Length: 247
Image (cartoon, rainbow, N blue to C red; front, side):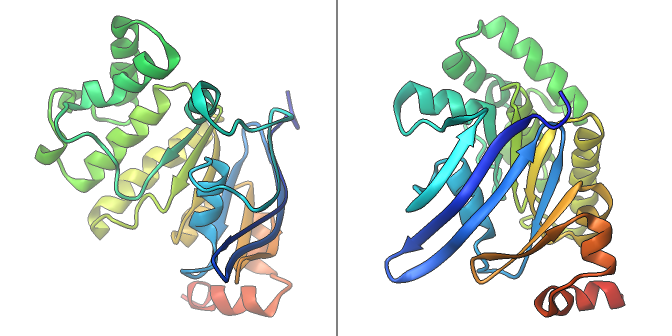
Protein backbone atom coordinates (compact mmCIF):
# COMPACT_ATOMS: atom_id res chain seq x y z
CA UNK A 1 0.00 0.00 0.00
CA UNK A 2 1.09 3.61 -0.48
CA UNK A 3 3.17 4.89 2.40
CA UNK A 4 3.99 1.41 3.72
CA UNK A 5 7.27 1.63 5.64
CA UNK A 6 9.68 -1.19 4.90
CA UNK A 7 12.63 0.16 6.90
CA UNK A 8 12.71 2.68 9.74
CA UNK A 9 16.05 4.01 10.97
CA UNK A 10 16.01 5.88 14.29
CA UNK A 11 19.02 7.69 15.78
CA UNK A 12 21.65 5.32 14.36
CA UNK A 13 25.20 5.75 15.62
CA UNK A 14 28.38 3.87 14.72
CA UNK A 15 32.04 4.28 15.71
CA UNK A 16 35.24 2.43 14.94
CA UNK A 17 37.46 2.93 17.96
CA UNK A 18 37.63 6.67 18.60
CA UNK A 19 36.37 7.52 15.09
CA UNK A 20 32.69 8.42 15.02
CA UNK A 21 31.37 7.35 11.60
CA UNK A 22 27.58 7.81 11.97
CA UNK A 23 25.77 10.23 14.28
CA UNK A 24 22.03 10.29 14.90
CA UNK A 25 20.90 8.99 11.49
CA UNK A 26 17.12 8.77 11.09
CA UNK A 27 14.96 8.21 8.01
CA UNK A 28 12.23 5.90 6.71
CA UNK A 29 12.14 3.85 3.53
CA UNK A 30 8.70 3.48 1.98
CA UNK A 31 7.71 0.69 -0.36
CA UNK A 32 8.45 1.52 -3.99
CA UNK A 33 10.69 4.48 -3.19
CA UNK A 34 14.20 5.15 -4.47
CA UNK A 35 16.52 6.90 -2.02
CA UNK A 36 19.91 8.12 -3.21
CA UNK A 37 22.57 8.83 -0.60
CA UNK A 38 25.24 11.26 -1.78
CA UNK A 39 28.27 12.88 -0.15
CA UNK A 40 32.03 12.99 -0.15
CA UNK A 41 34.15 9.88 0.39
CA UNK A 42 34.42 9.20 4.10
CA UNK A 43 31.06 10.77 4.98
CA UNK A 44 29.67 7.44 6.28
CA UNK A 45 27.47 6.46 3.32
CA UNK A 46 28.78 2.92 2.78
CA UNK A 47 29.00 2.23 6.52
CA UNK A 48 25.34 3.22 6.81
CA UNK A 49 24.41 0.75 4.08
CA UNK A 50 26.44 -1.99 5.79
CA UNK A 51 24.62 -1.27 9.06
CA UNK A 52 21.26 -1.61 7.32
CA UNK A 53 22.38 -5.01 5.98
CA UNK A 54 23.86 -5.86 9.41
CA UNK A 55 27.32 -6.40 7.96
CA UNK A 56 28.25 -3.88 10.68
CA UNK A 57 26.68 -3.69 14.12
CA UNK A 58 25.22 -0.36 15.15
CA UNK A 59 26.31 1.15 18.47
CA UNK A 60 23.07 2.97 19.15
CA UNK A 61 19.60 3.53 17.77
CA UNK A 62 17.27 1.07 16.11
CA UNK A 63 16.51 -0.31 12.66
CA UNK A 64 13.03 -1.76 12.09
CA UNK A 65 12.10 -4.00 9.15
CA UNK A 66 8.33 -4.12 8.57
CA UNK A 67 7.95 -2.74 12.10
CA UNK A 68 10.16 -5.29 13.90
CA UNK A 69 13.83 -5.07 14.97
CA UNK A 70 16.14 -6.71 12.43
CA UNK A 71 17.53 -10.11 13.50
CA UNK A 72 21.00 -10.30 14.98
CA UNK A 73 22.14 -13.79 13.98
CA UNK A 74 21.37 -17.24 12.60
CA UNK A 75 18.77 -18.22 10.04
CA UNK A 76 16.58 -15.22 10.82
CA UNK A 77 19.44 -12.88 9.86
CA UNK A 78 20.05 -14.85 6.65
CA UNK A 79 16.37 -14.52 5.76
CA UNK A 80 16.50 -10.78 6.49
CA UNK A 81 19.52 -10.36 4.19
CA UNK A 82 17.61 -12.30 1.53
CA UNK A 83 14.93 -9.60 1.70
CA UNK A 84 17.25 -6.60 2.11
CA UNK A 85 19.91 -7.48 -0.44
CA UNK A 86 23.22 -5.73 -0.98
CA UNK A 87 24.75 -5.14 -4.42
CA UNK A 88 28.45 -4.47 -3.85
CA UNK A 89 30.92 -2.30 -5.78
CA UNK A 90 33.17 -5.29 -6.44
CA UNK A 91 30.35 -7.63 -7.57
CA UNK A 92 31.21 -10.46 -5.09
CA UNK A 93 30.42 -13.19 -7.62
CA UNK A 94 31.76 -16.73 -7.13
CA UNK A 95 34.52 -17.11 -9.70
CA UNK A 96 34.27 -20.91 -9.78
CA UNK A 97 30.58 -20.88 -10.80
CA UNK A 98 28.82 -19.80 -13.96
CA UNK A 99 26.40 -16.88 -13.79
CA UNK A 100 23.33 -19.11 -13.68
CA UNK A 101 24.63 -20.89 -10.56
CA UNK A 102 25.79 -17.59 -9.04
CA UNK A 103 22.27 -16.27 -9.39
CA UNK A 104 20.40 -19.37 -8.21
CA UNK A 105 22.48 -20.80 -5.36
CA UNK A 106 21.35 -18.25 -2.75
CA UNK A 107 17.68 -18.87 -3.47
CA UNK A 108 18.23 -22.61 -3.00
CA UNK A 109 20.28 -22.39 0.20
CA UNK A 110 18.58 -19.46 1.94
CA UNK A 111 15.02 -19.45 0.61
CA UNK A 112 14.83 -23.25 0.36
CA UNK A 113 13.28 -23.33 -3.10
CA UNK A 114 14.05 -26.12 -5.55
CA UNK A 115 17.08 -25.87 -7.81
CA UNK A 116 14.83 -25.98 -10.88
CA UNK A 117 12.67 -23.11 -9.61
CA UNK A 118 15.73 -21.10 -8.60
CA UNK A 119 17.35 -21.55 -12.02
CA UNK A 120 14.11 -20.58 -13.76
CA UNK A 121 13.97 -17.38 -11.70
CA UNK A 122 17.68 -16.77 -12.30
CA UNK A 123 17.27 -17.01 -16.06
CA UNK A 124 14.31 -14.63 -15.95
CA UNK A 125 16.35 -12.10 -13.99
CA UNK A 126 19.42 -12.50 -16.17
CA UNK A 127 17.09 -11.81 -19.08
CA UNK A 128 15.81 -8.70 -17.30
CA UNK A 129 19.33 -7.23 -17.09
CA UNK A 130 20.38 -8.35 -20.57
CA UNK A 131 22.67 -11.15 -19.39
CA UNK A 132 20.75 -14.34 -20.30
CA UNK A 133 23.06 -15.10 -23.28
CA UNK A 134 25.95 -15.24 -20.79
CA UNK A 135 24.27 -17.57 -18.27
CA UNK A 136 26.90 -20.28 -18.72
CA UNK A 137 29.85 -17.89 -18.62
CA UNK A 138 32.04 -17.57 -15.55
CA UNK A 139 32.81 -14.11 -14.12
CA UNK A 140 36.39 -14.17 -15.43
CA UNK A 141 35.08 -14.22 -19.00
CA UNK A 142 32.85 -11.13 -18.90
CA UNK A 143 33.34 -7.37 -18.44
CA UNK A 144 32.92 -5.40 -15.24
CA UNK A 145 29.62 -3.97 -16.41
CA UNK A 146 28.37 -7.45 -17.21
CA UNK A 147 29.50 -8.70 -13.80
CA UNK A 148 27.55 -5.94 -12.08
CA UNK A 149 24.44 -6.66 -14.12
CA UNK A 150 24.79 -10.34 -13.19
CA UNK A 151 25.16 -9.35 -9.53
CA UNK A 152 21.91 -7.37 -9.81
CA UNK A 153 20.21 -10.42 -11.36
CA UNK A 154 21.48 -12.51 -8.44
CA UNK A 155 19.97 -10.02 -5.99
CA UNK A 156 16.64 -10.02 -7.85
CA UNK A 157 16.46 -13.81 -7.71
CA UNK A 158 16.07 -13.51 -3.92
CA UNK A 159 12.76 -11.63 -4.53
CA UNK A 160 13.95 -8.80 -2.29
CA UNK A 161 11.86 -6.19 -0.52
CA UNK A 162 14.74 -3.71 -0.77
CA UNK A 163 17.90 -3.54 -2.87
CA UNK A 164 20.91 -1.77 -1.35
CA UNK A 165 23.44 -0.50 -3.91
CA UNK A 166 26.88 0.41 -2.55
CA UNK A 167 28.40 2.63 -5.26
CA UNK A 168 27.55 0.03 -7.92
CA UNK A 169 29.37 1.86 -10.74
CA UNK A 170 32.54 2.97 -8.92
CA UNK A 171 34.60 -0.05 -9.99
CA UNK A 172 33.56 0.21 -13.65
CA UNK A 173 35.23 1.73 -16.67
CA UNK A 174 33.34 4.87 -17.79
CA UNK A 175 31.89 3.20 -20.89
CA UNK A 176 30.29 0.50 -18.69
CA UNK A 177 28.64 2.85 -16.20
CA UNK A 178 25.71 3.66 -18.48
CA UNK A 179 24.64 0.05 -18.97
CA UNK A 180 24.41 -0.54 -15.21
CA UNK A 181 22.61 2.75 -14.52
CA UNK A 182 20.13 1.89 -17.27
CA UNK A 183 19.30 -1.41 -15.55
CA UNK A 184 18.91 0.39 -12.22
CA UNK A 185 16.59 2.97 -13.76
CA UNK A 186 14.44 0.17 -15.21
CA UNK A 187 14.25 -1.43 -11.74
CA UNK A 188 13.22 1.89 -10.21
CA UNK A 189 10.55 2.32 -12.90
CA UNK A 190 9.25 -1.17 -12.07
CA UNK A 191 8.54 -0.09 -8.48
CA UNK A 192 11.42 -1.85 -6.72
CA UNK A 193 12.43 -0.25 -3.43
CA UNK A 194 16.06 0.86 -3.59
CA UNK A 195 18.66 2.64 -1.45
CA UNK A 196 21.56 3.75 -3.62
CA UNK A 197 24.88 5.11 -2.38
CA UNK A 198 26.22 6.84 -5.48
CA UNK A 199 28.51 9.47 -6.97
CA UNK A 200 26.32 9.52 -10.10
CA UNK A 201 24.58 12.83 -9.55
CA UNK A 202 22.43 12.67 -12.69
CA UNK A 203 21.02 9.33 -11.50
CA UNK A 204 20.31 10.76 -8.04
CA UNK A 205 18.59 13.79 -9.58
CA UNK A 206 16.57 12.00 -12.26
CA UNK A 207 15.61 8.65 -10.69
CA UNK A 208 15.30 9.21 -6.93
CA UNK A 209 12.23 10.02 -4.89
CA UNK A 210 14.44 11.33 -2.08
CA UNK A 211 18.06 12.44 -1.92
CA UNK A 212 20.03 12.32 1.33
CA UNK A 213 23.25 14.36 1.52
CA UNK A 214 25.64 13.08 4.19
CA UNK A 215 28.62 14.98 5.54
CA UNK A 216 30.82 14.05 8.48
CA UNK A 217 28.64 11.14 9.51
CA UNK A 218 25.38 13.08 9.74
CA UNK A 219 22.48 13.75 7.39
CA UNK A 220 23.25 17.34 6.48
CA UNK A 221 20.20 17.70 4.25
CA UNK A 222 17.46 15.52 2.77
CA UNK A 223 14.59 16.17 0.43
CA UNK A 224 13.23 15.77 -3.06
CA UNK A 225 15.74 15.74 -5.93
CA UNK A 226 14.29 19.04 -7.14
CA UNK A 227 14.84 20.65 -3.74
CA UNK A 228 18.36 19.29 -3.22
CA UNK A 229 19.60 19.99 -6.73
CA UNK A 230 17.94 23.35 -7.41
CA UNK A 231 17.50 24.98 -3.99
CA UNK A 232 19.66 23.35 -1.30
CA UNK A 233 19.40 25.00 2.10
CA UNK A 234 22.80 24.18 3.54
CA UNK A 235 26.14 25.67 2.51
CA UNK A 236 27.81 22.25 2.63
CA UNK A 237 25.22 20.83 0.22
CA UNK A 238 25.74 23.71 -2.21
CA UNK A 239 29.50 23.35 -1.94
CA UNK A 240 29.35 19.59 -2.59
CA UNK A 241 27.01 20.00 -5.57
CA UNK A 242 28.64 23.12 -7.03
CA UNK A 243 30.79 21.32 -9.59
CA UNK A 244 27.84 19.25 -10.81
CA UNK A 245 25.41 22.18 -10.83
CA UNK A 246 27.84 24.48 -12.57
CA UNK A 247 28.54 21.76 -15.13
